[in-house]
Length: 528
Image (tube, rainbow, N blue to C red; front, side, top):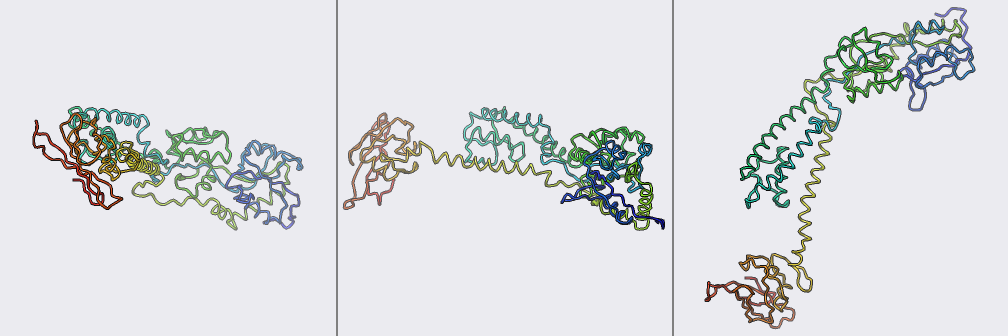
């Protein structure tokens, strides 16, 4: 306890607070907070309401703080009476005359590793990274080459299907179907190609076998990626496990751990608070293939308390003593009284434990599961591909429909001299009426199919007709057509409709066949 002759310290102090969570940090309103801020405020109340002003320092190294603690000009902007924020006692500073308080926190270094039981593959495209890009390129190139090969090998076989399952008729046939079968086999979504040519059979057998092997290798690779992405880190239990591993640390500490049998890999240039985040990111993202990092135990327990992707393991080692740094010229009586106050807060009130639980509660990660689970993040890329393929399927389905609607031949076949539209499969009223009145039509356009006349001479042209009862012989053919035009009496809006019936010819060489065409009322006529 303070002596009976203790008088409150009246000097106004400049307290330099260096940013270093959890000892010194800023809240959402920009006000200073943290372990040492709370402890200083509590100690000042214990000493009798000290008067002081906080001066925030961001990313300031120990070497930069030394001149501030040696300054005797308390009006200078580079003067500090007290330094808070991960200040560590050392014999070098004591030799310079810089004093320190009682320990405010017993810190040190600790090991952090990727969670070996998280099952996370760290990337939404990890399922693609099972194969490297060269293998994906070769696989795609091989598929593209096989498609036209199989198509041209089967070119002499008509009305054949490349698989048991029916190919979507809307997508057409031929080379498109070859692409569908070859690429579908990669993903095991189509059956074996049913080809007939010997070369095609050999290629189909080889391609099917290759895809079976690739699918097996991919499945095994994906499982290995998920279960053993952090396999090398799983056996690390503390500093004794770090020899012969890749350990990231600060550049100023790379040789500090030789006594533990390992040499650290410099990740950052200086020991600033932001450097700790660089360390954690390098380990989490696996950008440098690190097995572990070694960092300040207070920072690790503060920053990683809400995550389990990186876990803190083992005991604290290479201890350091965090304290308040006091200016060389500060009153020794104040230093003594502050030591008494800190001792009372630590022992009697257990205030150090209260602050530790508040700012460094430690991680609360669930026990290691018995199985590895993939997360949604690991497979997000797959859903993007699924959406893209569905969009492609919709486009491929709509294109033939759009093409049919804008088919020039269809529009020409279904329109008459007046431009009216009709169906290619059946003769429209306007088209038949125009034909009966003497308008010239090409035979395929008039009949709608080659089979209707039983011949393939598309150059034939029906002679102009002036009325029913005329016989017309198409050029180049012996077929004769009998036309009978008659309008329904008393029906001013009726249109003559041609009905055609093919009949056997009674005579002539070769048993020529004739067609009798009759005109009937449009309202009742039917095509025979």
